Length: 252
Image (cartoon, rainbow, N blue to C red; front, top):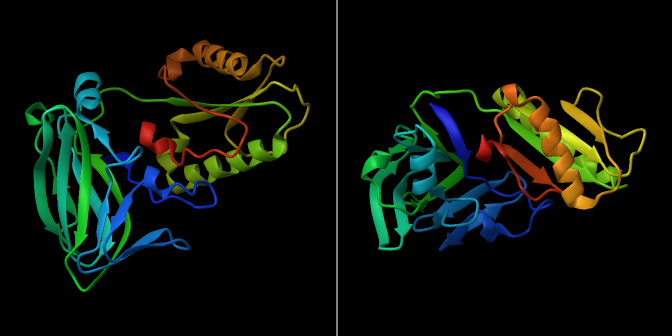
């Protein structure tokens, strides 16, 4: 199974807008320290949020993926539904009870799904439950390699750059497959000679006149285009302030 998207539990030191990631109802609370969700019977987690949905139209029209599944990392028993929200209404397209023995909910083939956004409802059916994580996966083989350039533009905000690079480096350690497909480009609009980032960090520094955020982004795109043969034309941008986008894995 290949992971296409992680359904994230936010780190509150980065983003306090929990509603961008998930919605809780009933007896369900966020365990901030462990980034888990603690539930009692009837507690529910929903992912009909900015970072928690999968676009049927985009994946069906622009990729070779034919079928998805939800893989749940949890303790306890949960009634799980996959829901498509579209112009014609809301439809439950798959449902199952997941527990320690069965952890995957298979969705119908993309060709049979209505256009819209897929989200998930996860309701605790045991006295107590803990949701540690969840991810959207596929058994389909990749038809071509995907490479991602991460562009960080900055003007004299080195501490923020350093913290972002540390977070990305930590992510690469957690998901080693990303280290082979993601490269970080720092566009230094301040033309500083030294950046306080780890020497081992997988990054390239591009000195640039102070042309603003748009100029920095253009410089990053130009750097990506120089090596387009080994990078897919896809870039993820971040400003030099503390990044609130929690996972490039979402775009990989």
